[in-house]
Image 1: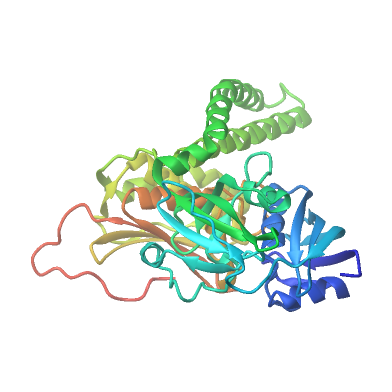
Image 2: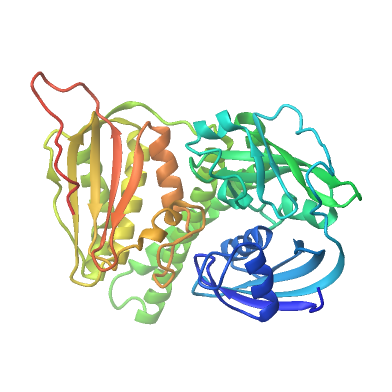
Length: 459
């Protein structure tokens, strides 16, 4: 390694837009190319942290080539449009740890793990527990040789730190790395022990995956903080919102119009903050695995009436029409009414916000395959196919140009649907709007001779 720095620019999907010669050389050797997804797995994890937190983040990362391993100080700076600029400086280099198989000093997986995995110094998958990954819908052969990030989506702690990256930088064992199994969405915790080559250099990790209670413990401190945040902020925020709304409701002429506008802005900001606090509490309960949902007969038509009423004024302000519910008359599902309303309000709110002025939001209920499906369709710009999985991840928004939103709504909505035995999916094309489908178990069996509808989903 003769050149001690590199620069690059990635798009919102971690594809390489541009890079200097040193970056291109490193990325190409890892199997990447300009215009394709970033191939440097450890750098990619840092990029996602910076984009998720929306602040510059820097870490020391080991990047290897054929002859040497280099310890690089890498800084990722997110842009408003989802792009991330990279700047790195080489701190030191040493002979490559990538020696022949058999020269590796074996390490045992961490104790009590649900299943195990192994990666090399470039964080490429060498081995996985085949039976375990198959249960998550993963082909164990297909992931071999692929970056670790094909298997897991790594998640940062509240302070932006990631135990795995710190372990790479300091060549040490790690534990408590929050992650999501990419194929199934299951939340887990990772731990790993360092693999050494015959010369004592870093050769990767032998790791374990922890699920259930063990995984939930990984964010214990964050969970306690979120619970305190909820208790401390809810009451004052409720008071601020109520006072601001009362000021804004003063009789005409009793208050200068500018102050009325200020009061409306304060109330709106307060509701936004309160929603974010509630989202954090819901997210914490989901990731601990102790989210409680009820199971009762739910009239989806009643859910639609209540949710539409809550958003009628917002839709009118934006010049958007919410069409009456079409489809099944007796749309009875089974689940938790409050949580179902929460999901519907999130979907309808997004549909209103992303619709153009004069647009129509269409709602439909139908029964299929033993499920009741509530479909919300807008006439917005649509969602590209490659974005449709990402919008259900934490802190990801479909369009950052639309104000408001924390990027948690769809993530929470899908988890709530799954907790009730259902699902939340999207169908969309650019320029054709988007249709979100909430599917919940039907409340009762079909009458004799009744058949589920088989026509395609309505747009």
